[in-house]
Length: 117
Length: 114
Image 1 (cartoon, rainbow over the protein chains, first blue to last red):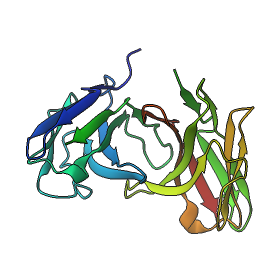
Image 2 (spheres, rainbow over the protein chains, first blue to last red):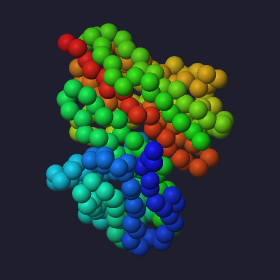
Image 3 (cartoon, chains in turn blue, green):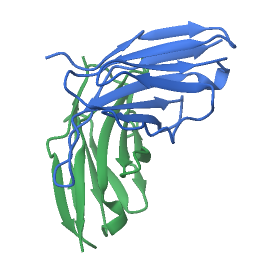
């Protein structure tokens, strides 16, 4: 079946512009994660959505970053007034929600490579 | 297309013992990077260890070491003297040196038994 789909695959924009990244999770996956990986660094957790619960925004690096998700469907990550330090690969993952007895695997998208000039 | 496979969805190990998590990958590229990440319940992704494909020497970070077999496309993680704090989800990841594409395995849930 279809996996996690992210768009665009590549985005180049000028410093100061706003960008919007999209993630289509696997149908039926109630959990959705956003991560980013900057060049030479490890993967950073950004935000987590689970069903209709309040999202876990603890990883968002600044108030220029925001994300939305309607129900269990598409999510968009928005970065306002982009800075060069925002250049990174942004990854989305989705999963079913497990319980304490069984972890559910995260399925990752191919990522969006964001370059800020 | 590159793929990363973690064949063990869950594993358990006794505290202070050694455990090995397996990871295999498929690629036609000769230059790439491999990673192991730890994800505790906080959902943060913690980089455990990193290996450059051009390096033959296996990477080591304290109690964590890898067995990198490039010809076999295998990249297993060994955790020595397991501690309760090692309990987490572990992800194996591949990063292309050509286009920076990142591919993750599905993860292995590691339980540490006291």
